Image 1: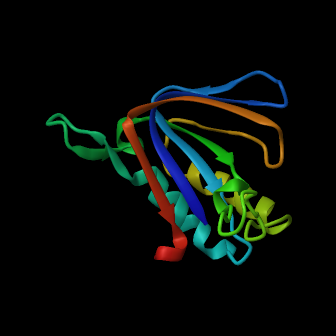
Image 2 (image 1 turned 180 degrees about the vertical axis):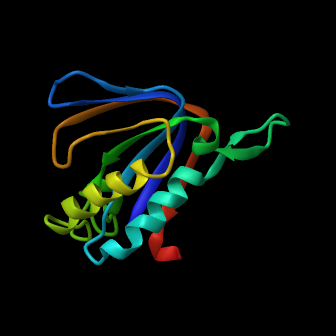
Length: 149
């Protein structure tokens, strides 16, 4: 699995033209699931994302987590994180997981990250048409890839 985590002052996702789902300061998490992933890694990834120390402490050092600060998270599924651009100019998405694995992993991630102590967790919908807005703070962007563990 691959999570692109951005420290944000605010973020929102609009699903199929509906009402925006908005958070204040916290984490914007784009989540990609690979076709060879298994569900057993999801709890560790959710814990890692929620507790990453990417927020500044009183001395200006990245030493605090979203959980410690009472911040929120916005999670959006994003199969394009597994795009291959090896050949040609059109990305290939063959490595991205398909349902039911992709939906099961996404739903489990939402469940697991909701249990980490964040103020709130908002999310998009798997496979939906979504528009995402955010203000990246820093900018701080961290990529967590479970293949590297």
